Image 1 (cartoon, helix red, strand yellow):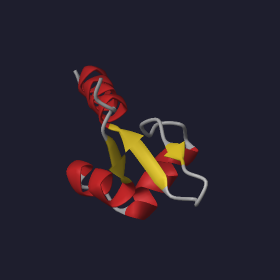
Image 2 (image 1 turned 180 degrees about the vertical axis):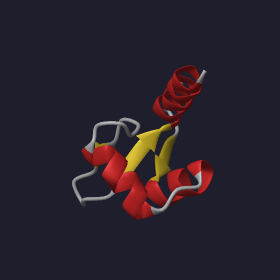
Image 3 (image 1 turned 30 degrees about the vertical axis):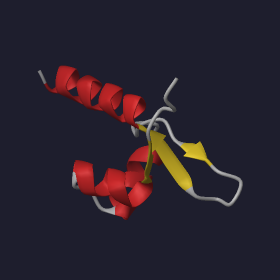
Length: 62
């Protein structure tokens, strides 16, 4: 069984075309995609969670 794809924060920011500061503001408001924090402090976002977040953004904009 394949492991789920985990994206690094810079990859996520590039895909959603958002600055790091704007992302952290959205995260503070609880509006960002689900994030996993690794023991070394790096952040990861699963591809499935990012796709789910995108779908929710599209629904709320409609």
